[in-house]
Amino acid sequence: MPSRLTRYVLVEILKIFIVSLIVLTLLILLIGVGRELLRRGLGLSAVVQLLPYILPISLQFAFPATALFSVCCVYGRMAADGEIATVKASGISPIRLLKPAIIFAAILSPIAVMVSDLAVSWGRPGVNRVVLMSIEDIAYRVLRSEQTYTSEQGFSIHVREVKGRTLVRPTVTVHNSGSQGPMKLSAKEGELRLDPESETLLLRVVDSQVEGGHLFHSIVPGETEFRIPLSRKNSQQDISKKSPSELPMSLLSSERLLQDGRNHAIVGQLAAHTGFAILTARNENISGVGDNQMESKLKTSRKRLVRLQTEPWRRWAWGFSCFFFVFVGAPLAMLAKTSDYWSTFGLCFLPTLILYYPLFIFGLEQAKDGIVPPYGVWLGNIILGLLGTVLMTRVRRH
Picture 1 (cartoon, rainbow, N blue to C red):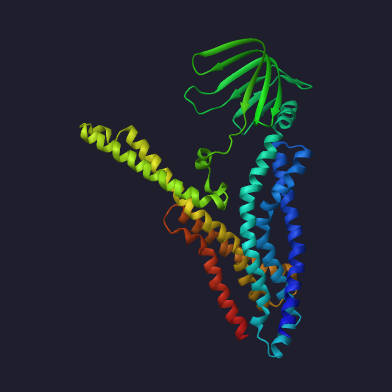
Picture 2: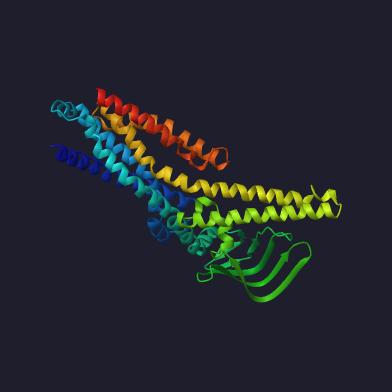
């Protein structure tokens, strides 16, 4: 009897979970693709290419809500229809009825962690790659309608008009952080072409003028081709500058060790600089510009190390929110005894939303600032676990 009952409850949970997951994922996909479409001016082919990359990004947000919704619907209906009272009258503890939900959530949570990591390591880079490969079409589409296009890759183009593929009187500004300032190029006409292998935008211009910095000025008659780099190839240097939230979990451990080594190197440089200033009796250099710059660099480096230490805890905490949502939602729905799906879900989801997410964000920010240990991001999960234990006790008594 208990095994048959367990299978029955688990099947009911899975049926509602699969349907609601499909609906919510499609809704998030439409919102995500629509946002990219409006923000970046993507064409239809690029939107189709985006779909598989946005899927894991959508699933990582859909899993907790759909897990909570499915158990709330099943246990709320069972309690309202008297099924739980019948099972209890036959001598089976109501806690045993919650076993399928706990098993379901325990299996789903590690999957949610893996999907979240897939969204970071494959989904987001894939979205950026699709946008990068579509930049030629995007630029022409925007220039035809607005005569001005500004790219997130650090350049902008202004034209008088666009005739076919020809840009009439283009002015291109390539922004950079160097001391010479941005480079500005103007020409009689030009044409854009993407080189996908080198991830470079080729600009063919006729009778161009190039200005850069305060003194550099050049006039180039005839036809010339300029290259605008759109991205940097992945390298160790690039990884060291990435946010920890952009790194896959497989790289977090090694990057954390490398960042710790960078911290020690900066401390060594700072000590050597201070020691040299003392030996040469240049006390003003101890708190000078160079010293302040190294201290600022050390502070930034230490902060990144703390974030690298926090990031794995954050992802596991987020993935296992599925388990703790179910741990609270299932007994709460059983106690609520209502068969209306949305009433039950609202009754369970709103307290969870109001309680969990502020605690999760608070613990995350405190951990990122180094005020609490990295496992402080589990604060919201721990509170939900305590609340779920109290609700389980009430279910057992009633």
